[in-house]
Image 1 (cartoon, rainbow, N blue to C red):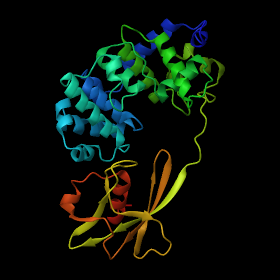
Image 2: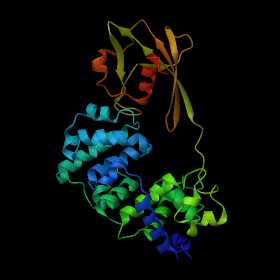
Image 3: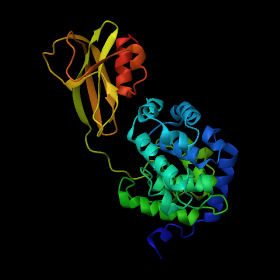
Image 4: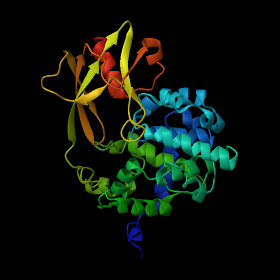
Length: 338
């Protein structure tokens, strides 16, 4: 008996799968990417949904697929325009990798998203989760799609006390999904697990009274919902102080482009400099921006000299440049909106 099979001793897999899919088909949210089987559009949605709330993604998805409706449209687009349509979603490497991968799909597969796991998983930025999600939802293949929601649900249902932050643990959950997934409807099964984790089996205060699989749930039976999943805490977040220098002259503003590699690569911004206690300029206020692994504390100054390595642009031109959420916050501060 394998490690994963031990979790299924006396576990009613058929009941779990049947109840989950029935519940999903009845209760699923009406989301735009659920109205299509277009693998390219589903792929876009899955990339956007990484680290981002569903309600935030919806308008971005609709604008993005309207502007780039086919792989050829995205492959041929200028990267700055692609970034502009992603502006505000964050984690910009996601869309850069997506465009590179789609260009490969156009070049190698005539714009048809591969339905073979080996081929699709080799594309830029496509990991195990995205592979499983696209192949199961768009192509009906019984592939696991394991994200944080799925690990939380299955850790509680099966009583898995393994650290979900450990990379090796994902393999255990993928093996568990292989044991459970319905080959007749893998799309509804995978989406059902995700939906259950998002709407019912939440990280805190799960709504067990609404859960369709409570009768077979280890945590519900033992009142262990708050114990699971097991997850080690992240290390201390790094706080980095910056000064943002805002220079305006004759209706133009000074901006700079970030390096082509690294955090927020290629995005435009007011020049950011290491914080100085005696900065020359007029302090406007402060902006805080939280990344997954660090926090920027930004003091915003109006300055009277144009900072080095910047260009002057008018507001109309500035509006065409892709900027980060941190930059948007500074703009809102300058307008008195925050």
